[in-house]
Amino acid sequence: MSRLTGRAGGPAATPPQPTRELTAVSADGSRLHVEVYGPEGAPAVVLAHGWTCSIPFWAAQIRDLATDHRVIAYDQRGHGRSPLPGPGGYSTDALADDLEAVLGATLAPGEKAVVAGHSMGGMTIMAAAERAGFREHAVAALLCSTGSGRLVAESTVVPLRPSRLRTRLTKAILGARAPLGPVTPLSKKILKYATMGPGAAPERVEVCARVVHACPRPSRVAWSHVLAGLDLSAGVRELTVPAAVIAGTADRLTPPVHARALAAELPQCVGLVELTGTGHMTPVEAPEAVTAKIRDLVTAYARPARTKEEAV
Image 1 (tube, one colour):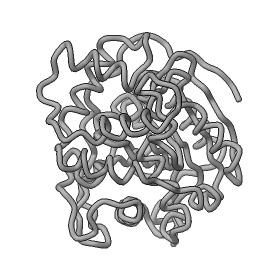
Image 2 (tube, helix red, strand yellow):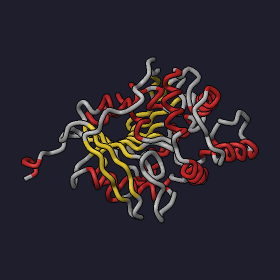
Image 3 (cartoon, one colour):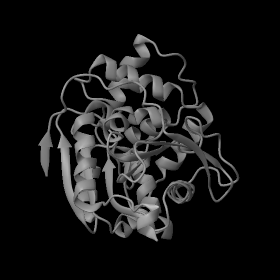
Image 4 (tube, helix red, strand yellow):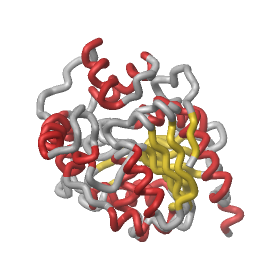
C-alpha cells in the first residue's frame, strides 16, 4: 500500500471533443450513450462512472489519456445522455450487461482494454467479472473509491458511531426522493461534506456538483436502493485480471475499509493506493494520481490494437 497526495489545481470541466459517438444496446434493449476519444490503434481504456455521475466526471482523465490512448467512456443507464432503462431496470446484472454491450460495441473481437471504474463503476466491473464479454476484452482493472457490499453500514456520512440508527439514517439520506435542485453555495457545501475531502478545491467541488445535480431523480433514487442491498463478494473473487485499488482516506461514502478488503480478496491485486485527505470523488479530487495509475496498468498489461493489415 502507498499513500499519495493529489496536486492542487482544477481539472477541466468538460472532456475534449470525441472522435466519435455511438449507441450501445444492452441485453434488455436499453440504449447507452458512448463516446470515443484519441487515436485509433492506440491502447484502449474504458471508463465506467459512478452513481449520479456521467462522462464529464472523467474529463481530466480523458484529456490526458486521449493524447496517446483510445479512451472509451459511457453514461451508465439512466445517467447523462443514456435514457432511463428498458425492462432490465436497475440491478447489478444490468450493470454487467451494459458494460458487456459497451465492450462489444467498441472493441474488435479479442481486443484488450484496461477498464477503470469509479464507485458504482467499480461495482460494474465486479458484477461483470465472470461474464464472457468482460473476460474477452479486459486485460486489467482499476477500482476507484468502491466496495463490494455493506455500503450503508460502513458509510460515515452520518457522524454517529456504527449502529442500527446510523444505518437507517444513512439509507434514508442516500435514498431521499427530494430533488437536488439548482447548484447553490449551500448545496455545494453539503455535497463537499458528503463526497469530497475537506481540502477539495472550490473548482473541483463545482465540477462534481454540476455533474451530480444533473442526474435524473428517478435514476438516482432507484440506484440508491440497488446499492443499499449490494453484495458483490462473488464478483471480487471472479475478477482474475490484474486489478489495482484506489481510495481516499477521507471518503465518507466508501471508507478505506472497503478498499483494504478488496485488496485482500482480489485474486491478483497489483496495488492499493490511499490518497491522503481525499474524499470519494478521487478522479476529480486527485486526477493526476488516478490517471497515473491507469497509465501504469496500460504500460504493464496492455498492447496497442492491431491494425487491419496486421490482423490479416
